[in-house]
Amino acid sequence: KLEETSPNEYQDNKFVCQRATPLKHHNTKFTDALEILERHAVYVDSTQRDSRALAFRRAACALKSYPKQITRIEEASKLSSVGNHSKKEILENGSSDEVQDILSSEFFKTMEVFSSIYGCGPATARKWYEKGYRSIADVHHAVSDGMKLTEQQTMGFKYHSDLVKPVPKEEAINIKDIVIKELSKIQPNCIVELVGGYRRGKLSGHDVDILITHQNNSKVEGLLHKLVERLEKLDLMVGRNPHFESKTLYLKSVKGIGEGSQRQGGHMDSLDHCFCMFQMGKSFENEKVEHSCMQTTGEADETGTSTGSSSSEQMAAVVRRVDLIVAPHKQFPFALLGWTGSKQFNRSLRDYAWKVLKVKLSNHGMWDHKHIPVRQVEATSEQEIFHELKLEYRDPHDRNA
Ligand code: ATP
Ligand code: MN
Ligand code: MN
Image 1 (tube, rainbow, N blue to C red):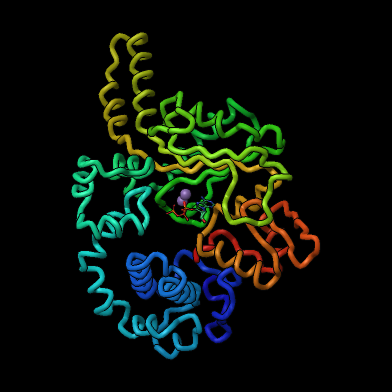
Image 2 (tube, rainbow, N blue to C red):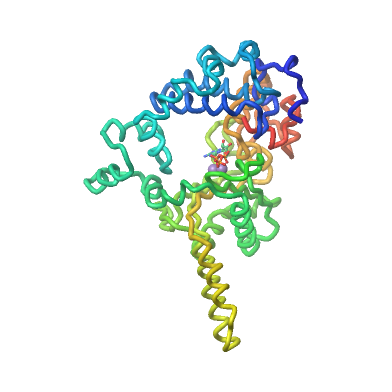
């Protein structure tokens, strides 16, 4: 599949969404280096995202979808997205002094640590760096001296050691299965998809993205709230939501998600969405308790108990970030496309749709602005969306831009 285009026919002047970008590609040593340069550029100036950082990102995207390993600089020179700075990195085999210097710099190392805190973006990280903080402990001290954190950052600090641990796909599937099981008790026949990186073939991720819909629109209204309440009652969530006085971190519910309220292709996602913190471990604890109760009321002499409890103890109570999203059925294909990503693939898709077709694409739908008055274009599947956009269909595995 990787070899379907020969390097000679390869065109990087196309939009990223017009090319297949697989997860595994041939130029990792270069793209890893370019991604460091990109992150560094964002850390230096997050308002300049559109220039330097974006140039590195475009170059990395071109290399990710290039059908073979670049061995000669002449090859890279033919790629219009690979600018001089990125070319230099390729010349130096992805291990230039510049990259080495960045990696060993106090600035970069500190910014990486701060950016690993949920709720801490590059602007906050830099603010802390400029105040002289160099470690998580430094920030903790500042907090005890009265520095304010946002709700998200507070959670980010509290569960930092858990949240930096990657979520293996098997665990993401477990969480999805719990969601399916609990949903079925609230509302039968929901459609549930594991989206985000796992749908693109990744074997681990930084969070678990779960998209939910129901064929009947009236069943969708209020569904997320009920689901979250139920998961909280089962003690599967940690955190506290200031707006809902529940334990959930953040629950956004937009009234009247139906037809009338759709802004014409706005980028802001106004689907029902809950950022939450799951704690599977606690439920395993609960199951263990139930299990041992059953055992004591049952057989008086149970020899297998020690193996049973040691396997429960292995289930560490790791806190995981989970995004729960509920979409009305009509918007589901758009939400599915949007929440599958990658972010860069979506960006390219929206860019292409607008620049080439004057179509605004969002997680809710698409709107044709060539047509006066603006006309909504419907689709019942991702395939139909690509078709309407006059694009070759891309499997989620080929959307890893
Ligand atoms: P990872 O495996 O590290 O979690 P990911 O690709 O799943 O990577 P996420 O940040 O979880 O990354 O996002 C998944 C997709 O959902 C992305 O394509 C992103 O564009 C989209 N997305 C994330 N947050 C929002 C949001 N608030 N509104 C709309 N879309 C979002
Ligand atoms: Mn994700
Ligand atoms: Mn997510």
